[in-house]
Length: 418
Image (cartoon, rainbow, N blue to C red; front, top):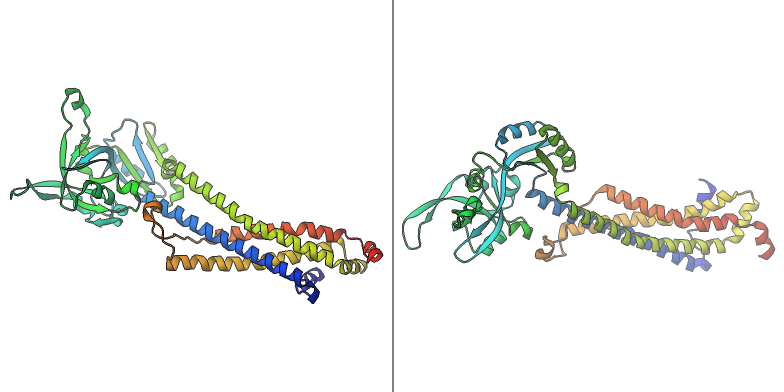
Protein backbone atom coordinates (compact mmCIF):
# COMPACT_ATOMS: atom_id res chain seq x y z
CA UNK A 1 0.00 0.00 0.00
CA UNK A 2 1.32 3.43 -0.93
CA UNK A 3 2.02 5.65 2.04
CA UNK A 4 -0.36 8.34 0.76
CA UNK A 5 -3.29 5.90 0.79
CA UNK A 6 -2.27 4.45 4.16
CA UNK A 7 -2.07 7.88 5.81
CA UNK A 8 -5.28 9.07 4.10
CA UNK A 9 -7.19 6.09 5.50
CA UNK A 10 -5.54 6.55 8.88
CA UNK A 11 -6.82 10.13 9.08
CA UNK A 12 -10.36 8.75 8.87
CA UNK A 13 -9.91 7.34 12.37
CA UNK A 14 -10.36 10.29 14.67
CA UNK A 15 -8.59 10.75 17.95
CA UNK A 16 -10.47 11.92 21.03
CA UNK A 17 -9.63 15.56 20.40
CA UNK A 18 -10.73 15.26 16.77
CA UNK A 19 -14.31 14.10 17.38
CA UNK A 20 -15.76 17.22 15.82
CA UNK A 21 -13.83 16.67 12.57
CA UNK A 22 -15.01 13.07 12.55
CA UNK A 23 -18.63 14.17 12.99
CA UNK A 24 -18.35 16.51 9.98
CA UNK A 25 -16.84 13.64 7.97
CA UNK A 26 -19.84 11.47 8.79
CA UNK A 27 -22.20 14.31 7.88
CA UNK A 28 -20.45 14.69 4.53
CA UNK A 29 -20.71 10.93 3.88
CA UNK A 30 -24.41 10.88 4.75
CA UNK A 31 -25.00 13.97 2.60
CA UNK A 32 -23.42 12.29 -0.42
CA UNK A 33 -25.48 9.15 0.24
CA UNK A 34 -28.74 11.12 0.46
CA UNK A 35 -27.95 13.02 -2.72
CA UNK A 36 -27.08 9.87 -4.68
CA UNK A 37 -30.17 8.06 -3.35
CA UNK A 38 -32.44 10.97 -4.30
CA UNK A 39 -30.88 11.20 -7.76
CA UNK A 40 -31.39 7.50 -8.45
CA UNK A 41 -35.00 7.51 -7.27
CA UNK A 42 -35.90 10.70 -9.17
CA UNK A 43 -34.35 9.41 -12.40
CA UNK A 44 -36.12 6.05 -12.01
CA UNK A 45 -39.50 7.73 -11.45
CA UNK A 46 -39.09 10.21 -14.32
CA UNK A 47 -37.97 7.39 -16.61
CA UNK A 48 -40.99 5.37 -15.51
CA UNK A 49 -43.35 8.24 -16.35
CA UNK A 50 -41.61 8.84 -19.68
CA UNK A 51 -41.71 5.19 -20.79
CA UNK A 52 -45.26 4.66 -19.58
CA UNK A 53 -46.40 7.71 -21.54
CA UNK A 54 -44.40 6.59 -24.58
CA UNK A 55 -45.97 3.13 -24.49
CA UNK A 56 -49.47 4.59 -24.21
CA UNK A 57 -48.82 6.96 -27.11
CA UNK A 58 -47.34 4.22 -29.30
CA UNK A 59 -50.19 1.89 -28.44
CA UNK A 60 -52.51 4.11 -30.47
CA UNK A 61 -50.19 5.79 -32.95
CA UNK A 62 -47.95 4.17 -35.58
CA UNK A 63 -44.19 4.06 -35.20
CA UNK A 64 -43.90 5.36 -38.77
CA UNK A 65 -46.78 6.93 -40.72
CA UNK A 66 -46.78 6.88 -44.53
CA UNK A 67 -49.04 9.36 -46.36
CA UNK A 68 -49.57 10.40 -49.95
CA UNK A 69 -49.61 14.03 -51.02
CA UNK A 70 -52.60 13.15 -53.20
CA UNK A 71 -54.56 12.02 -50.12
CA UNK A 72 -55.84 8.60 -51.15
CA UNK A 73 -53.54 5.64 -51.70
CA UNK A 74 -55.32 3.36 -54.22
CA UNK A 75 -52.50 0.85 -54.72
CA UNK A 76 -51.83 0.29 -51.04
CA UNK A 77 -51.36 -3.54 -51.24
CA UNK A 78 -48.33 -3.01 -53.49
CA UNK A 79 -46.95 -0.30 -51.21
CA UNK A 80 -47.41 -2.46 -48.09
CA UNK A 81 -45.64 -5.31 -49.90
CA UNK A 82 -42.69 -2.98 -50.66
CA UNK A 83 -42.43 -1.70 -47.09
CA UNK A 84 -42.63 -4.97 -45.14
CA UNK A 85 -39.30 -6.48 -46.36
CA UNK A 86 -37.31 -3.38 -45.33
CA UNK A 87 -34.81 -3.81 -42.45
CA UNK A 88 -36.20 -3.27 -38.92
CA UNK A 89 -39.80 -3.17 -40.17
CA UNK A 90 -41.99 -5.46 -38.05
CA UNK A 91 -45.28 -4.90 -39.90
CA UNK A 92 -47.16 -2.51 -42.17
CA UNK A 93 -50.94 -2.13 -42.29
CA UNK A 94 -53.38 0.00 -44.31
CA UNK A 95 -55.38 2.58 -42.38
CA UNK A 96 -58.24 4.98 -42.97
CA UNK A 97 -58.18 7.99 -40.67
CA UNK A 98 -60.41 11.04 -40.44
CA UNK A 99 -62.68 13.25 -38.37
CA UNK A 100 -66.43 12.96 -38.02
CA UNK A 101 -69.23 13.19 -35.48
CA UNK A 102 -70.99 10.51 -33.46
CA UNK A 103 -74.46 11.17 -32.13
CA UNK A 104 -77.16 9.53 -30.08
CA UNK A 105 -80.63 10.70 -29.11
CA UNK A 106 -79.25 12.83 -26.27
CA UNK A 107 -75.65 13.77 -27.11
CA UNK A 108 -73.00 14.13 -29.77
CA UNK A 109 -69.20 14.15 -29.90
CA UNK A 110 -66.51 14.81 -32.48
CA UNK A 111 -64.06 11.93 -32.87
CA UNK A 112 -61.06 10.73 -34.83
CA UNK A 113 -62.25 7.61 -36.65
CA UNK A 114 -59.79 4.90 -37.56
CA UNK A 115 -60.57 2.10 -39.99
CA UNK A 116 -58.45 -0.96 -39.21
CA UNK A 117 -58.14 -4.52 -40.44
CA UNK A 118 -60.52 -6.45 -38.12
CA UNK A 119 -57.97 -8.93 -36.81
CA UNK A 120 -56.42 -8.81 -33.30
CA UNK A 121 -52.97 -9.53 -34.74
CA UNK A 122 -53.27 -6.47 -36.99
CA UNK A 123 -54.22 -4.14 -34.12
CA UNK A 124 -52.49 -5.76 -31.08
CA UNK A 125 -52.34 -2.64 -28.90
CA UNK A 126 -56.04 -1.91 -29.35
CA UNK A 127 -56.87 -5.53 -28.55
CA UNK A 128 -54.69 -5.35 -25.41
CA UNK A 129 -56.63 -2.36 -24.06
CA UNK A 130 -60.12 -3.71 -24.77
CA UNK A 131 -62.43 -3.67 -21.74
CA UNK A 132 -65.29 -5.33 -23.60
CA UNK A 133 -65.53 -6.91 -27.02
CA UNK A 134 -62.75 -7.72 -29.49
CA UNK A 135 -61.25 -6.24 -32.66
CA UNK A 136 -62.30 -9.35 -34.59
CA UNK A 137 -65.97 -8.50 -33.99
CA UNK A 138 -65.65 -5.51 -36.34
CA UNK A 139 -65.88 -7.96 -39.24
CA UNK A 140 -69.50 -8.88 -38.43
CA UNK A 141 -72.86 -7.10 -38.36
CA UNK A 142 -75.15 -7.06 -35.34
CA UNK A 143 -78.90 -7.18 -34.90
CA UNK A 144 -80.29 -4.06 -33.24
CA UNK A 145 -84.01 -3.33 -32.58
CA UNK A 146 -85.41 -1.24 -35.37
CA UNK A 147 -87.52 0.77 -32.94
CA UNK A 148 -88.25 0.57 -29.23
CA UNK A 149 -91.14 -1.75 -28.38
CA UNK A 150 -91.13 -3.41 -31.81
CA UNK A 151 -89.83 -6.86 -32.57
CA UNK A 152 -88.19 -5.95 -35.88
CA UNK A 153 -84.41 -5.70 -35.99
CA UNK A 154 -81.81 -4.28 -38.35
CA UNK A 155 -78.24 -5.51 -38.76
CA UNK A 156 -75.60 -2.82 -38.25
CA UNK A 157 -71.81 -2.78 -38.61
CA UNK A 158 -69.80 -2.58 -35.39
CA UNK A 159 -67.84 0.29 -33.86
CA UNK A 160 -65.39 0.37 -30.92
CA UNK A 161 -65.34 3.43 -28.63
CA UNK A 162 -63.04 4.74 -25.95
CA UNK A 163 -64.34 4.37 -22.40
CA UNK A 164 -64.66 8.13 -21.86
CA UNK A 165 -66.34 8.60 -25.23
CA UNK A 166 -68.87 5.84 -24.43
CA UNK A 167 -69.61 7.59 -21.12
CA UNK A 168 -70.12 10.95 -22.85
CA UNK A 169 -72.52 9.40 -25.36
CA UNK A 170 -74.22 7.28 -22.67
CA UNK A 171 -73.96 4.08 -24.73
CA UNK A 172 -73.13 0.50 -23.83
CA UNK A 173 -72.38 -2.68 -25.72
CA UNK A 174 -75.14 -3.35 -28.25
CA UNK A 175 -76.47 0.22 -28.36
CA UNK A 176 -76.87 1.90 -31.76
CA UNK A 177 -75.44 5.30 -32.62
CA UNK A 178 -75.24 7.56 -35.65
CA UNK A 179 -72.07 8.32 -37.59
CA UNK A 180 -72.39 11.69 -39.29
CA UNK A 181 -70.16 11.29 -42.33
CA UNK A 182 -68.20 14.09 -44.02
CA UNK A 183 -70.42 16.43 -46.03
CA UNK A 184 -68.28 16.59 -49.17
CA UNK A 185 -70.16 17.72 -52.28
CA UNK A 186 -73.57 17.75 -50.57
CA UNK A 187 -72.65 21.06 -48.91
CA UNK A 188 -73.32 22.86 -52.22
CA UNK A 189 -76.80 21.35 -52.44
CA UNK A 190 -77.86 22.60 -48.98
CA UNK A 191 -78.63 19.05 -47.91
CA UNK A 192 -77.96 17.39 -44.59
CA UNK A 193 -74.82 15.29 -44.30
CA UNK A 194 -75.35 11.56 -44.73
CA UNK A 195 -75.78 9.53 -41.55
CA UNK A 196 -74.82 5.90 -41.07
CA UNK A 197 -75.84 3.77 -38.10
CA UNK A 198 -73.46 1.55 -36.19
CA UNK A 199 -73.73 -0.74 -33.17
CA UNK A 200 -71.30 -0.45 -30.25
CA UNK A 201 -69.51 -3.80 -30.07
CA UNK A 202 -66.46 -2.91 -27.97
CA UNK A 203 -65.02 -0.43 -25.47
CA UNK A 204 -61.31 0.19 -24.86
CA UNK A 205 -59.42 2.01 -22.13
CA UNK A 206 -56.09 3.50 -23.23
CA UNK A 207 -55.51 5.11 -19.84
CA UNK A 208 -55.18 8.54 -21.48
CA UNK A 209 -58.27 10.81 -21.57
CA UNK A 210 -57.27 12.42 -24.88
CA UNK A 211 -57.49 9.00 -26.53
CA UNK A 212 -60.39 7.53 -24.57
CA UNK A 213 -62.58 10.55 -25.34
CA UNK A 214 -61.71 11.11 -29.00
CA UNK A 215 -61.01 7.75 -30.67
CA UNK A 216 -63.37 5.33 -32.40
CA UNK A 217 -62.58 2.26 -34.52
CA UNK A 218 -64.46 0.56 -37.34
CA UNK A 219 -63.42 -2.03 -39.88
CA UNK A 220 -61.31 -0.91 -42.81
CA UNK A 221 -64.11 -1.65 -45.30
CA UNK A 222 -66.65 0.38 -43.31
CA UNK A 223 -64.25 3.35 -43.06
CA UNK A 224 -63.64 3.22 -46.82
CA UNK A 225 -67.40 3.43 -47.39
CA UNK A 226 -67.81 6.28 -44.89
CA UNK A 227 -65.18 8.44 -46.60
CA UNK A 228 -66.00 7.33 -50.13
CA UNK A 229 -62.50 6.00 -50.77
CA UNK A 230 -63.59 2.91 -52.67
CA UNK A 231 -60.72 0.42 -52.52
CA UNK A 232 -58.18 3.05 -51.40
CA UNK A 233 -56.86 4.09 -47.98
CA UNK A 234 -55.36 7.40 -46.85
CA UNK A 235 -52.58 6.15 -44.58
CA UNK A 236 -50.24 3.22 -43.99
CA UNK A 237 -48.95 2.61 -40.47
CA UNK A 238 -45.63 0.87 -39.93
CA UNK A 239 -44.40 -0.79 -36.75
CA UNK A 240 -40.66 -1.26 -36.21
CA UNK A 241 -38.54 -3.65 -34.15
CA UNK A 242 -36.58 -0.86 -32.44
CA UNK A 243 -38.53 2.24 -31.41
CA UNK A 244 -35.48 4.47 -31.62
CA UNK A 245 -34.73 3.28 -35.15
CA UNK A 246 -38.07 4.67 -36.36
CA UNK A 247 -36.41 7.79 -37.80
CA UNK A 248 -33.98 5.68 -39.80
CA UNK A 249 -36.81 3.45 -41.06
CA UNK A 250 -38.87 6.52 -42.04
CA UNK A 251 -36.00 7.85 -44.16
CA UNK A 252 -35.55 4.46 -45.79
CA UNK A 253 -39.28 4.24 -46.60
CA UNK A 254 -39.30 7.77 -48.04
CA UNK A 255 -36.34 6.85 -50.27
CA UNK A 256 -38.09 3.68 -51.46
CA UNK A 257 -41.46 5.37 -52.11
CA UNK A 258 -40.02 8.35 -53.94
CA UNK A 259 -41.73 11.72 -54.56
CA UNK A 260 -45.40 12.07 -53.77
CA UNK A 261 -45.12 10.26 -50.42
CA UNK A 262 -43.90 11.30 -46.99
CA UNK A 263 -42.98 9.19 -43.97
CA UNK A 264 -42.91 10.59 -40.43
CA UNK A 265 -41.83 8.73 -37.29
CA UNK A 266 -43.42 8.83 -33.84
CA UNK A 267 -40.69 11.09 -32.45
CA UNK A 268 -41.48 13.74 -35.05
CA UNK A 269 -45.21 13.46 -34.37
CA UNK A 270 -44.67 13.88 -30.60
CA UNK A 271 -41.60 16.11 -30.70
CA UNK A 272 -42.89 18.78 -28.31
CA UNK A 273 -44.02 16.30 -25.67
CA UNK A 274 -40.75 14.33 -25.78
CA UNK A 275 -38.72 17.56 -25.61
CA UNK A 276 -40.61 18.61 -22.47
CA UNK A 277 -40.00 15.23 -20.82
CA UNK A 278 -36.28 15.33 -21.66
CA UNK A 279 -35.94 18.89 -20.36
CA UNK A 280 -37.84 17.97 -17.21
CA UNK A 281 -35.52 15.05 -16.52
CA UNK A 282 -32.44 17.23 -17.07
CA UNK A 283 -33.75 19.96 -14.75
CA UNK A 284 -34.59 17.49 -11.98
CA UNK A 285 -31.15 15.89 -12.36
CA UNK A 286 -29.42 19.26 -11.91
CA UNK A 287 -31.65 20.30 -9.01
CA UNK A 288 -31.19 17.07 -7.06
CA UNK A 289 -27.47 17.10 -7.88
CA UNK A 290 -27.28 20.22 -5.71
CA UNK A 291 -27.67 17.92 -2.69
CA UNK A 292 -24.41 16.22 -3.67
CA UNK A 293 -22.82 19.65 -4.16
CA UNK A 294 -23.81 20.63 -0.61
CA UNK A 295 -22.25 17.41 0.66
CA UNK A 296 -19.14 18.18 -1.40
CA UNK A 297 -18.90 21.57 0.31
CA UNK A 298 -18.93 19.70 3.62
CA UNK A 299 -16.08 17.52 2.33
CA UNK A 300 -14.10 20.68 1.52
CA UNK A 301 -14.70 22.03 5.03
CA UNK A 302 -13.69 18.70 6.59
CA UNK A 303 -10.45 18.46 4.62
CA UNK A 304 -9.54 22.10 5.33
CA UNK A 305 -9.95 21.40 9.05
CA UNK A 306 -7.89 18.20 8.77
CA UNK A 307 -5.11 20.07 6.93
CA UNK A 308 -5.06 22.72 9.66
CA UNK A 309 -4.98 20.04 12.34
CA UNK A 310 -2.26 17.96 10.66
CA UNK A 311 0.24 20.76 9.95
CA UNK A 312 2.87 19.11 12.14
CA UNK A 313 2.37 15.75 10.44
CA UNK A 314 2.71 17.36 7.01
CA UNK A 315 5.91 19.15 8.08
CA UNK A 316 7.42 15.90 9.38
CA UNK A 317 6.49 14.01 6.20
CA UNK A 318 8.03 16.70 4.00
CA UNK A 319 11.15 16.72 6.16
CA UNK A 320 11.39 12.95 5.60
CA UNK A 321 11.30 13.46 1.82
CA UNK A 322 7.61 13.35 0.93
CA UNK A 323 6.85 15.27 -2.27
CA UNK A 324 4.24 17.99 -2.63
CA UNK A 325 2.24 15.70 -4.94
CA UNK A 326 2.39 12.91 -2.36
CA UNK A 327 1.09 15.19 0.40
CA UNK A 328 -1.73 16.35 -1.83
CA UNK A 329 -2.71 12.78 -2.69
CA UNK A 330 -3.16 12.00 1.02
CA UNK A 331 -6.10 14.39 1.25
CA UNK A 332 -7.43 13.49 -2.21
CA UNK A 333 -7.61 9.85 -1.08
CA UNK A 334 -9.35 10.83 2.14
CA UNK A 335 -11.98 12.90 0.30
CA UNK A 336 -12.51 10.22 -2.36
CA UNK A 337 -12.94 7.57 0.29
CA UNK A 338 -15.68 9.65 1.94
CA UNK A 339 -17.32 10.19 -1.47
CA UNK A 340 -17.03 6.51 -2.44
CA UNK A 341 -18.61 5.27 0.78
CA UNK A 342 -21.43 7.82 0.43
CA UNK A 343 -21.96 6.94 -3.23
CA UNK A 344 -22.10 3.19 -2.59
CA UNK A 345 -24.50 3.69 0.31
CA UNK A 346 -26.64 6.04 -1.80
CA UNK A 347 -26.79 3.57 -4.69
CA UNK A 348 -27.86 0.77 -2.36
CA UNK A 349 -30.48 2.96 -0.68
CA UNK A 350 -31.71 4.24 -4.05
CA UNK A 351 -32.07 0.72 -5.44
CA UNK A 352 -33.90 -0.38 -2.30
CA UNK A 353 -36.23 2.64 -2.49
CA UNK A 354 -37.02 1.96 -6.16
CA UNK A 355 -37.64 -1.73 -5.44
CA UNK A 356 -40.07 -0.83 -2.64
CA UNK A 357 -41.93 1.60 -4.92
CA UNK A 358 -42.12 -1.01 -7.67
CA UNK A 359 -43.33 -3.81 -5.41
CA UNK A 360 -45.75 -2.19 -2.98
CA UNK A 361 -47.19 0.83 -4.89
CA UNK A 362 -48.01 2.64 -1.66
CA UNK A 363 -47.96 6.08 -3.31
CA UNK A 364 -51.30 6.58 -5.07
CA UNK A 365 -51.86 9.25 -7.72
CA UNK A 366 -55.10 10.74 -9.10
CA UNK A 367 -55.47 8.94 -12.43
CA UNK A 368 -57.34 11.78 -14.10
CA UNK A 369 -54.28 14.00 -13.56
CA UNK A 370 -51.33 11.63 -14.01
CA UNK A 371 -53.03 8.91 -16.20
CA UNK A 372 -51.52 6.31 -13.82
CA UNK A 373 -52.76 5.29 -10.37
CA UNK A 374 -49.33 4.62 -8.81
CA UNK A 375 -45.82 5.97 -9.26
CA UNK A 376 -44.15 4.18 -12.21
CA UNK A 377 -40.52 3.21 -11.61
CA UNK A 378 -38.04 2.02 -14.23
CA UNK A 379 -34.48 1.01 -13.30
CA UNK A 380 -31.55 1.12 -15.71
CA UNK A 381 -27.94 0.28 -14.73
CA UNK A 382 -26.60 3.05 -16.96
CA UNK A 383 -28.43 5.68 -14.89
CA UNK A 384 -26.84 4.33 -11.72
CA UNK A 385 -23.47 4.51 -13.52
CA UNK A 386 -24.07 8.15 -14.56
CA UNK A 387 -25.05 9.12 -11.00
CA UNK A 388 -22.01 7.30 -9.59
CA UNK A 389 -19.67 9.05 -12.02
CA UNK A 390 -21.21 12.48 -11.31
CA UNK A 391 -20.99 11.96 -7.55
CA UNK A 392 -17.37 10.79 -7.58
CA UNK A 393 -16.38 13.59 -9.96
CA UNK A 394 -17.89 16.22 -7.63
CA UNK A 395 -16.21 14.64 -4.61
CA UNK A 396 -12.88 14.60 -6.44
CA UNK A 397 -13.20 18.28 -7.35
CA UNK A 398 -13.99 19.03 -3.70
CA UNK A 399 -10.59 17.61 -2.66
CA UNK A 400 -8.48 19.75 -4.97
CA UNK A 401 -8.39 22.97 -2.92
CA UNK A 402 -7.57 21.35 0.47
CA UNK A 403 -4.98 19.08 -1.20
CA UNK A 404 -3.23 22.06 -2.79
CA UNK A 405 -3.23 23.92 0.50
CA UNK A 406 -1.59 20.93 2.19
CA UNK A 407 0.94 20.53 -0.62
CA UNK A 408 1.98 24.21 -0.38
CA UNK A 409 2.65 24.03 3.35
CA UNK A 410 6.32 24.82 4.06
CA UNK A 411 7.90 22.73 6.86
CA UNK A 412 10.05 25.66 8.01
CA UNK A 413 6.93 27.73 8.76
CA UNK A 414 5.55 24.98 10.97
CA UNK A 415 8.85 24.59 12.79
CA UNK A 416 9.17 28.35 13.25
CA UNK A 417 5.68 29.02 14.60
CA UNK A 418 4.60 25.71 16.15
